[in-house]
Length: 237
Image (cartoon, rainbow, N blue to C red; front, side, top):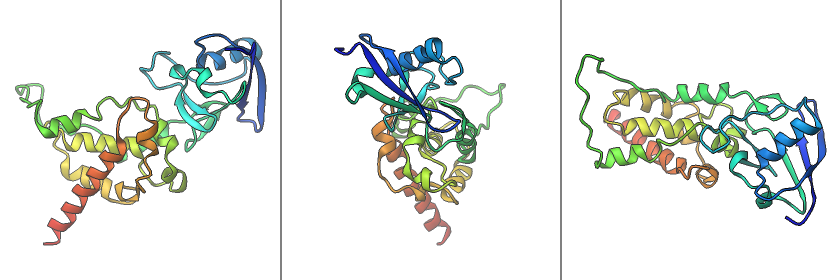
């Protein structure tokens, strides 16, 4: 990296922005830059992180207007000149500075019936699952979602429609719909076909394009659209 310092502009919850001069280093991540600011320039700066290795998703922020995991984003890849602007994830309430309130995101996860609906007890034998079945392969395709909310922040439909459940919640619903161990098919389809459900999706694809784990929420949502349409047709017969 040729420049000796970076111009790092951080959006503040009190309004406006603050720009800091941050020393530039090789292999420096966006999270490294934010941490340097908090540790050396402004100890009042609030942000969130945990693992630093792309496992928890808690460090997600807007970087030059794009939602990203900051711990896995090298600063050299996002600089415009020697500058970068960092803000809190959009589509979520701001607690302070770069830390957002994740409750609405998780509330929608539950509203989409994104919780396991089991029928067995601990006294029953473990169910046999065919790992090679098409349904299991489909379910496994979304299982690595870690709820970082990057897709939620990327979604323009969420921006314009507070009721929309969002890509992560709908992908989770699709995963469970294809899970042979889950007994909640009717509840899931009812939840995702209602107000704010899968048919609100405009298929713009930002969720899939920006997912740091290379998941495909757009395809999952398309699957929910097909299944809910089939259900409506069957009920109307």
